[in-house]
Image (cartoon, rainbow, N blue to C red; front, side, top):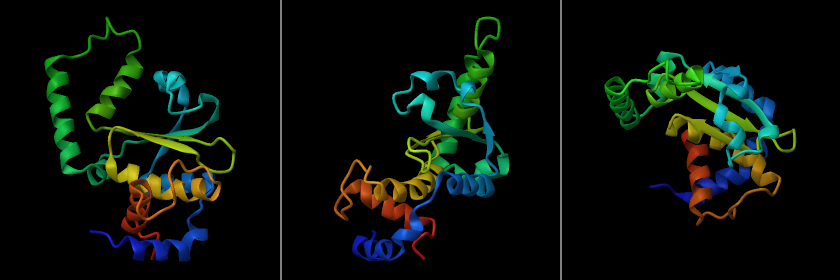
Length: 183
């Protein structure tokens, strides 16, 4: 159980150091996770994704180093990947019948735990306004939340109150604590 009052006090003390520019976020993701940039055009469904303004997508990254993936995925996520692998072996894609083979292969790699894709959006050109971790990786999702919410709050764009009783703000405080940003 978290002591949100204590975390909030630590947050207030460190608040100004928890605002990261889009370049700082990219540097942290690429150095910590060996993430490599790739073109947003490779993710065909991104154009119609309600989560983002397509023209404001700043960068897309892939993490596909097996030694890092094994550390990032939880046991439950790894179990889901094994189930996906078995299901996809029983019902394989037929390359002759699939139009967008490269894209479908990317999706299979996400489902089966061979890659994680990260999409970052910047509406103002300075900070990350939205992100998505494709491949269900809670640890990475929490890390990116810790990196981007400070700037969202600072710019008054948060969709929830900055209140220790709000579950979304609590989630942010937990993430800051989990990854050592409050130390």
